[in-house]
Amino acid sequence: MNTTTEQQIMAHNESNWDLFWTFLKIGSTAFGGFMALISVVQNYLVDRKKLLTESEILDGISLATILPGPVAVNVVAYSGYRINGIPGAVVCATAVILPSFILILLLSHLYFTWGELPVVSNIFKGFIPAVAAIIVAATLNLGKKTLKGKAEYAIAIMALLFLTIIGGFYSTIGIIIASGLAGLLFFKNSSDTGIETARIVPDKKQAFPKSILAFFALPLAAMALPLINTGSVISAKLFITFAGMSVLLFGGGFVFIPMIQEIVVDSYAWVTNKEFIDGIALGQITPGPILISATFIGYKMAGILGATAATIGIFLPPAMLMLLCTHFLDKLKQSVSINAALTGIRCGVIGMIAAASIVVLQSAEQNWISAVIFLAALVSLVKFKLEVVWIIPISGLIGFLLY
Image 1 (cartoon, rainbow, N blue to C red):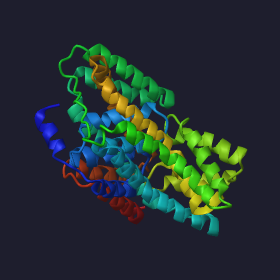
Image 2: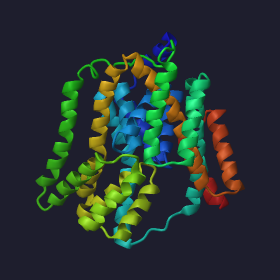
Image 3: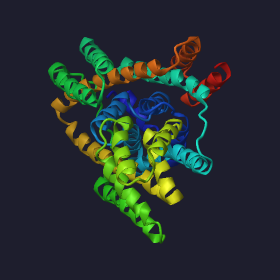
Image 4: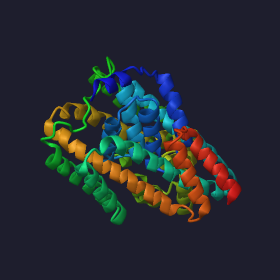
């Protein structure tokens, strides 16, 4: 990492309040799935605020991809930890989930009080091409600084083609492994692997073992809270159930849906099959991760307390595992071989992000309106550096007016 970049990053001493506000805005506007959320995080933290480097955010995406749990929330926790240690991780993850949590609580109340909710589909027709533009912009920004030669481009393009043509969770894991091996082959003897020295957060990061023990105590406290209120033991069961499932989640929220369905519909009968499908649909129209649908299930079973227990259960254990692995990743990065493998993986991740933009574009309405929204959003992001927080709402309004 060059001295200028390092000084530029270290000059930003972001407070936890500033982080909370930043990620609250991100969590309120990041419609379109986990890659859209990650792209918004990249736009804010790397391009605009210079709090993280391209390599750091790519390391987080790479690590989150091969660990269990919701990828986007894990990347957010990782980012907060990189900036302000354990407190930063807690603040960022909480803030990014909070808007969706509040919205899904409101929608759940309306749903179980009044029945089915009409979906404003025209607004979301405007969201989709804008989300694709955000992902493309993130790909361009990351690729510009990471893909420096033919080998880097080759790895990224192969990852793009493989994920686009074959797809699926096992393809993702295969790309990560193959990209790492390619990195060992091409970059082990290179003097410039593109790896920056890990930045250690003063005090907070040095005290990791003590902090992580305190962090692991949080789920225990969350599990005990429902028991304080007599008659709400079901909340403890909700927490334990969702926490247990969360550490078995590999491949993102959509891969996880069948497992949730088998347990909450078939085994426990907490919701009917129709309610479960409606809950997933409501989760998708919120700006946060799809697994926020756990809040819907918890709300039906035990109101706000049950919703809180289910939400903590589904997000907290994977985030803790992510932070633990991040700590050891810093130590492993002293190895030349690990650095070379990470260089290859970063190139593969850029290809995977590009593939995500294609998937999103394919799901958009194939007409001139989508094309205009996509191009306008892309130009606004790349050329005029417009904040992402404005892109999604404006695109939704355009979709509402034109469709």
